Image (tube, rainbow, N blue to C red):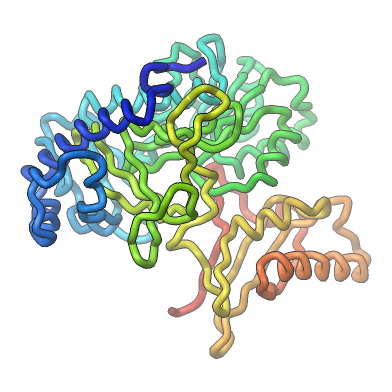
Length: 432
């Protein structure tokens, strides 16, 4: 089912016309209402009249997360607080929180794009959707919640955690769609096993997973263990929350709702736009938001765009599953390493669990990458020789794939901490 066929199947020319009109209006609004944007544009010698169409995007200045933090809490808003009906904020674990505000129209737009995403995922009005993303200041829970209600499906607003209760409600309420982080989905399978619950006995058929990078290997693991179709959804609170893009049932990239969010791919080093199909950093301009519109916001997520028409009939551009982040990339002795690459290696091995922790330390002038990885119960042996052989196998596979040596430590199942939110994969102890 396609929720908004007129837009989702529009020609590139029709989409460009919509984007151009909305971009011109957005540039005027931020220029006249946000001193920071006005200063940035004046520094480049720009006035709103210089922006005539979406082709002029490259003339505009970039926005970065520090701009939101420097203008904390409401300095980036383009409307008075009397028009803001909801606030969300990041956790602020790496600095001051980034605050976003929504007008009533913003919330309606958000519900619309999440509803489109749900339809892309194959969710219907008669489905029962269990939302196990966190509610509160995090955008995940409420984003999926209102999109589900807008579709007309039934929502179970359980939020994250309380895993046994989650499984009980799946049984009692007949949950057909689960929405959570992919790492939590795998944790659900572990607890199901402990409870003696066979996934075949549940009504689950679709999972909508996001909020953290995950590999194709992890997708296969989830689909095999939960017996569902695992769909990738993408969003970030600064842009709107979940619903910026989502896979359709073809699972060939996430369709971006580009009548609201105009994407670009840039080289993260030179900041120059890259042609379609090139891997680079994803940048978004929001062209319908009223509360806090952003121009050329650098997401730091690495992906590439595919403008070809999808088999599902949608013409909305597709973004590949993010390979990592330009600011989360680890550089180990000159080699670029992303956690998702490690994960892919581990998930291709039958002996390991998809739970791991990377610890980066500095030994004198050298960086040392340590990997803690859980071994499946049947392979965790008291026989030192067998464990050492497995450790060498993992080390060799990572070395051949990434070109960097890793100090591998095997740990027992369920040793690494589980979480209902984003999984913590990296601890960087270097003083750089």
